[in-house]
Length: 272
Image (cartoon, rainbow, N blue to C red; front, side, top):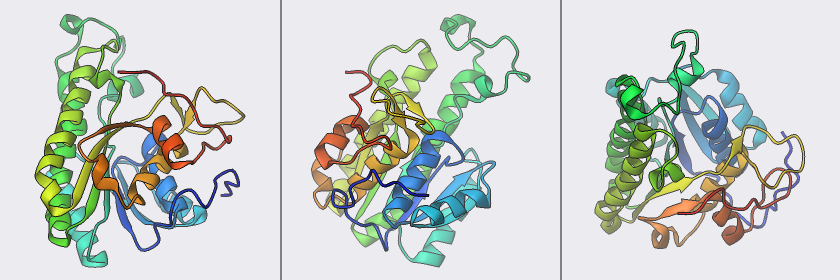
């Protein structure tokens, strides 16, 4: 895969770095895995339906990919991934918590007929809360525990938690907003405890993401653009100055000088 639009001088190489991206089967997670691979990283990528095609796409863009099937609602499966990384690589530099179960009902219309995302909370099925918190908040916490055990020992590392503006303002679904606010607070609080060990933790907000841009469109962000934002953070020698922060991918593009696949630097999707 060729991406001639990216300036190879704006973001340092991640060759030799080991990353884990959770929920990398599609869209944002897939783009993050590719963005890290584009900079030469070794990327372990998980998903319930992940295939070797994901690993090949990372290889094709310049990195090394390892695809692992994992249900992030299953702690034992998650633990085994970190054990595998420690045994095979000896260290972990980057964890991206992207796995998300909150869209299950939207993506399975046959199984959940009549479900409406914007129904008021008293008409929402109570299980929607569990969908969003089990894989989206709790899963971030569990993965961060295992990552921290490795990163604290090595005295460096970066944990990126993918969140959204719903953590700061109402976006049409109560459990959604509460779960994203929880992700933001988790990122901030673990950053406080990790700081003495040189490990950083942030929340990252994408904008309006489409998996691939088919033309010039500065009002949308490709999934790969979010990956480039994560890669820029991971290559920043002063990343500790950003720890505990909520960051916008569009702002990072201007700070670090990278662009989207159409050569644009999109404006932030919203504000706080």
